[in-house]
Image (cartoon, rainbow, N blue to C red):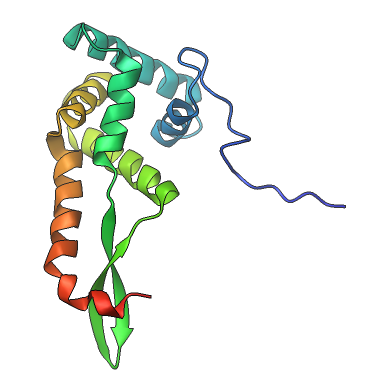
Length: 157
């Protein structure tokens, strides 16, 4: 019997410092060119900066809250009906919510030029924790688009 390989959360090992699967996923998405040690050190330095900026908060809790705050609950998808294409609002499944959240935070971090990644990461975590920042703006835009296209929700799958 051949066992199929599937990349799932069960096979991903938690990180060493926080023992969290979410942190491992984030570090894997942060990584460039297979340089995991660089991504690890950048993430952990960012968490140290978060600890200095918010001394009363646990940095892991700030990170988790930031990812949760950026998660979209609804998005628009293109649906073709009778030659016309409509933007139909649809709910987002939880795995995609998490993937989009991580992707948007990293886009915001990489969009901040002229400063080290660890400082940008820390600033974006704190901003998302406070429901501010570029990643939250992206989420609000997606929700606004879904709200604007509510009239086409009857085309939903």
